Length: 225
Image 1 (tube, rainbow, N blue to C red):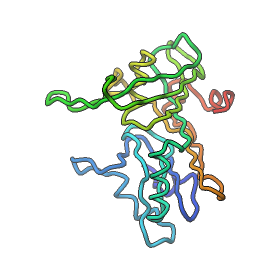
Image 2: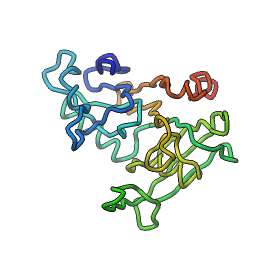
Image 3: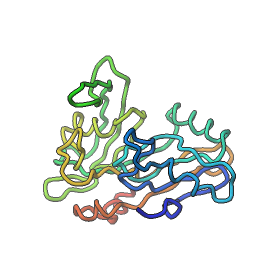
Image 4: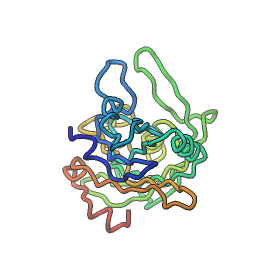
């Protein structure tokens, strides 16, 4: 894995946005394997405090991850995520091609768990409201590249909405898809407003795993993504 300091795509006195590699957990796993926490000391860039993540990306999701460089900014950024005012855009390859070009998925989500399968999120009327806008960007070999804009921030929201809302799991998703190959879900863009200051914003380049699947950067650029 490259040094995380080489994965910084935005930095100023308040914020760092990382292009997080797939495979790196944000929270320390129970098995004690390496996580983002093990790298925070290398991301101080002259500050005494370690930066802290403001939100989470799943272990196998790559792309934009916001870190706050001081407690005051962390509190403010966390409140923005809680209020749903952060602009987020993800891209994913799904194992099928939706008939429509775009739409909105509204499926409330709830957590279930069992001793045999562990935990997962499922659509449930009694769950927490979850809303995702999606748009088809391109298709190849029976699969589609989709841009997702979550309007809420539920755990595994995009993964469950792809599987149950679109009817196609994300390629490589080991829980909601077929689990074959790397999971092709990427946090492409993140922007957080900061009042009179310019927004903290960054676009993360498409990983090589997408290119290998036949979905290139040019598809996103042609679609303005």
